[in-house]
Length: 137
Image 1 (spheres, rainbow, N blue to C red):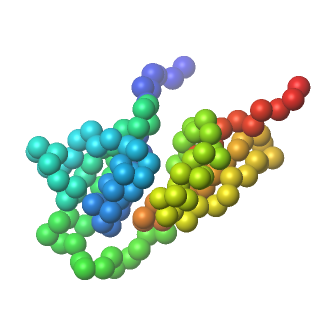
Image 2 (tube, rainbow, N blue to C red; image 1 turned 135 degrees about the horizontal axis):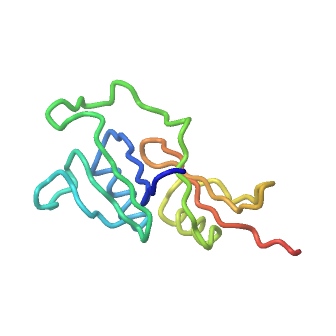
Image 3 (cartoon, helix red, strand yellow; image 1 turned 90 degrees about the vertical axis):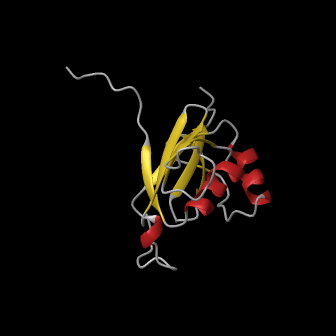
């Protein structure tokens, strides 16, 4: 027997917080819930919590503000991580993301019954928007 778990929130280390907040908030529609700034008044923070419906995501800077180099010393590729998000209309999301200037792959139907759309955030994290493909029985 296990114990109850009431949700899961991923934390991603990023290089440029204002750039990442702009992507998640202004492109994907997340709301900034809380930041490391006491009054949440600025995107120039070291940590933030974002919410979009039931989805939550935390961003944390790889470098503290006073130690951030002009360019990242090591750019993480995040090749081993994908964030999957339910999306009832992947084709609409594809058109929307293209209109926002995002480099996005065309949606595909997988062999396991999901329609998926993949895009990368400003730090290279792969985001997969998906929904089940309706199958005739």
